[in-house]
Image 1: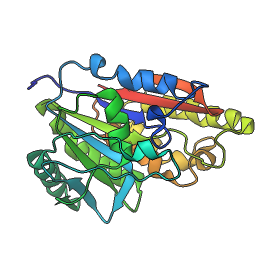
Image 2: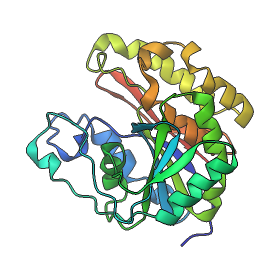
Image 3: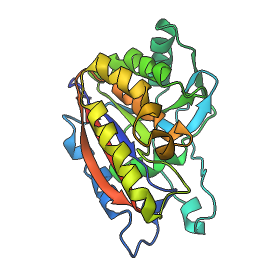
Image 4: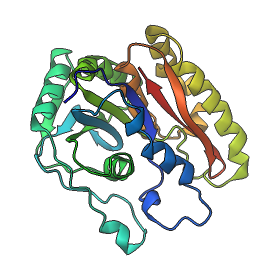
Amino acid sequence: MSDQRQPTFFIPHGGGPCFFMEDPRGVWTGMAGFLGGLSASLPARPRAILVVSGHWEEQGFAFTGATAPGLIYDYYGFPAHTYQLRYDVPGSPDLAARAADLLKRAGLPARTDDRRGLDHGVFIPLKVAFPDADIPVVEMSLDRSLDPALHLAAGRALASLRDEGVLILGSGMSFHNMKAYGDPRATGPSQDFDRWLAGAVQVPGTERAAALAGWRGAPQGPFSHPREEHLIPLMVAAGAAGGPGRRVYGETVLHTAVSGFRFD
C-alpha cells in the first residue's frame, strides 16, 4: 500500500505477443527493456494498476470488474505457445466501481463489466513490466467515438486515483500504421509526427489538451494513425496528469519512430 502519488504513462505494447517470441534481430529488445524498468521508476509500489487499452472499445466507458480476470488472446497467426501465456493477476472490483463512479460524477457514461477479461494490450506489456502478477489490475475501455477531448476529460475525472496509489497506464502505440511498418519510406513521416507528439505532451495542461485534441492537424498525423485507437489511450494518461509530460522511451522500430511518455 502506498500513499505516494503515482505518475501516469503512455506505453507502447508492441506487436501481438512480441516479447515472448524468438527475436533474433532484437526488434523488440529496447521496448522490452523500457517496460521491464518501469516498476523501478515509480515512487512506490502501486496499490493497483488501471490500464486503458487500445484494444477495447465500448459505447461509453467500461471497467473490468472481475476478481480474477481471464485473458483475451486477441492476436492472430502467432506461434501456438503464445496462446498458452498466463498472467493470473487479481482484479479489483472496488477500483472498477470507484473509477466508474468518478466518471459518472463528471457526467460521463461509465459501467463495470464483470465478464470481460484482459486483452493483449494489457497482459502482454504488464507481463514484462510486473512479471509477478501480484498487483491488482483493472482494464478501462475506450469510448468507441474515439473523441480525444472526451478521453482527456475522462482522464481528468480519474486523476484523484493517483493520490490513492493507483498507477494509470495508457497502452497503445505512438505510431500505428500497419501498412507502413517495415517500410523505410515511413521513417521520415513517423519522425515528423513523433517530434510533434513529444512537443505536445510537454506543454502545460490546458494548452496540452488543446494540442492533443487537434492531433489530426499535426505533421503526418493521419498517416501515423489511419485509425486512432492506439493513440487515444494517451489522452486518458495526459488528462489525468497535472504537470507536463516527457518522453521516457524512444527508438526506431520496424523503420518507424516509437515513443513512450511519463506524466508526473
